[in-house]
Length: 223
Image (cartoon, rainbow, N blue to C red; front, top):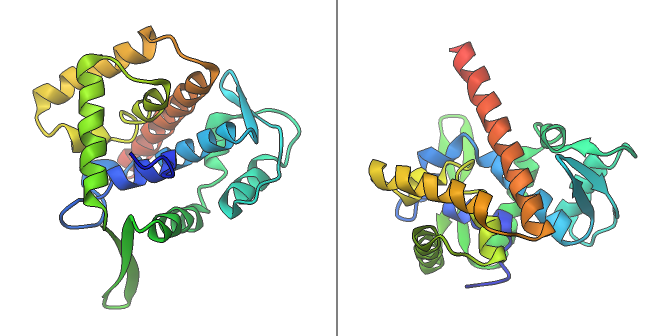
């Protein structure tokens, strides 16, 4: 596996349609929040923030990474710890920039290419996988980890984001297999002894799941 691919980038890659490009429908609704959750963990991993319960404490606002620096400026405006859910909400109007940065990182690593599209007056860019084998291998590894109930701490971090991201539908097309995988994942999150890093990732993933559910409820009430 390519260790240079970050957590948020792995989530993005898993959300893409391998054959047709663009995002798989199951991942669309929760993609923004899941990418943000992955990025928050990356800030934790780089010792820019720490998790205290369901809150974030900014430790170091300095980073050479433009995207990390942008996020730290957003969540570091107050000296008090900030709820993970509130931190996620601070980026509602910045997702276009954030996704662009994630995409650019993957383009530079030759994992995806961006193709301009237009319909009438609407213009956008669509993502296409270049390194499809990386994604196939990543999916196979996730299936193995869930099946055996065994995963390293690094693997557990990615697994904690699979359910809230909607990627269970992308990985398990069969409903019965998906239901079984969901139960096994939940069991792994509870029973596996993990470090502070994985605990932080699980807390971020839980906040992502709550935000996705709240967003879906608002959308349903409008229609």
